[in-house]
Length: 299
Image (cartoon, rainbow, N blue to C red):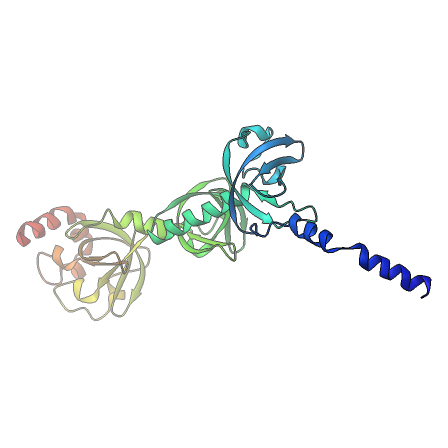
């Protein structure tokens, strides 16, 4: 047998079954990445903290995984010998040590909270931290989100929104792809919708004119003034009566918050058929009294 094969035989036999068992022992297969575990911090140093999670080796939590907020003193967020929850972010190394995070656990909880808020159609305050061509980047409970330009109330001067706090609703909450898309217009619509009721006189701006009716913006809620609800007299062209940007007063005759629909009427304000067409300014000027009279007639 030459010296090379002798050497390989020695190398093979040097790793005995005992060694194999010991190597296995170092690895604690109950701990896996993504798992939430309980543990107690027993030592702090400049780089992080050592945590007893009941394994064969202690676990390590790096300083920058201690909290979402900036931390100067680790003992503020990692009290010694107090049972805390941790997320395993790296499985065991050669020494059998797992790496933990409190920060990632906080982030996980925030995503869960945002999903629940989306399900219950809640709104959230967001701070504008950046601007680009497509919209604004915002901070939402320490996470980064985005509001597209089309979902902002102010779409022309985005730079002026920097540093501002806006109220927004949720368009998309996707934790797996770290996508958080919000809408300021959605929030305005839902808060303003709750202020509306049937029979109420409202004022808004004409935003669109179609053959079947006129769209009116009521502080973020889009309402439809159907052609049949404009006047008691037949109208052949709405463009003869209305123009884009014009202020209109009308009475709410139907509401459907689920579908985001509001139906309004100027017809009920008329003293005689065709008055809206013939004397629009007069109908608008005395709209409050006319709306009260219509409400009393309906009772």
